[in-house]
Amino acid sequence: MIWFFIMSNEQIHPLHATDKKIIDSLITKHNPEDFDLINLARLIKRYDNFPGEIEIKADIQKILKFWNITQDILFSMTRKLWLNNFRPSKTSKELVGSGFDTSN
Image 1 (cartoon, rainbow, N blue to C red):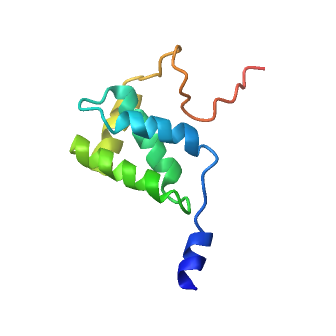
Image 2: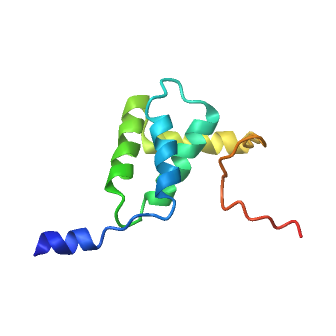
């Protein structure tokens, strides 16, 4: 009965399919680029307190281990990137943030 209760509280994130593709592309990178670091950091933030998504959370830990960095090191690296005016390529289909257009 306890097992059923635990399973029923696990949710699938609305962006699971998109995020899983990103995770799958990151998990094989030997030398992550700046945008890869940014992507991993934002996915960690997205799934940190999300109930469920055990597979994605486990994959995130695998990537950190494969890249031989900790979450704290990753966040430090990405803070430096943003402070040095990093901006995603305008040709990139991946969005950082919501993608909401506030220009009007």
